[in-house]
Length: 138
Image 1 (cartoon, helix red, strand yellow):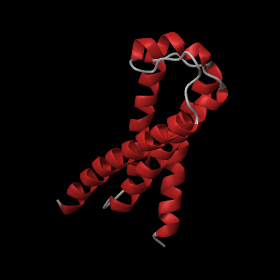
Image 2 (cartoon, helix red, strand yellow; image 1 turned 45 degrees about the vertical axis):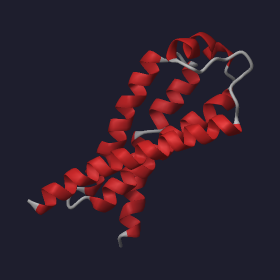
Image 3 (cartoon, rainbow, N blue to C red; image 1 turned 60 degrees about the horizontal axis):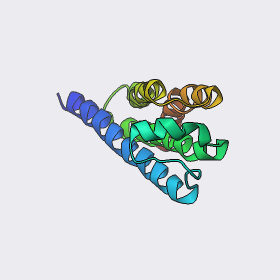
């Protein structure tokens, strides 16, 4: 029973801490790389209407947020889990991938960014987190 509770806590903690990292990086990025002139980011519809103004540099911190959140969330899950640690690391990153897919459906973005984000920022980061976790715990 203790292992089951630890695994549940691992998944929840990984999801929460990963989300905090994701949002933190995106917020930092919006201060370091301000939105383009004329872009209104106050709500989803206004953002969708001005997304065509975004340049590649405006996608850097969203990518880093997605990858960093999936990586740190996966690492937290790996460290806390009582069994099948790699499974939990990848499960947390898969949760982030689901969020990324929903975001890709809701918010238009250039195809190059969607491909990079969905293929690199989530599951590979969960695998990398699990691999690092394994090395740390040796």
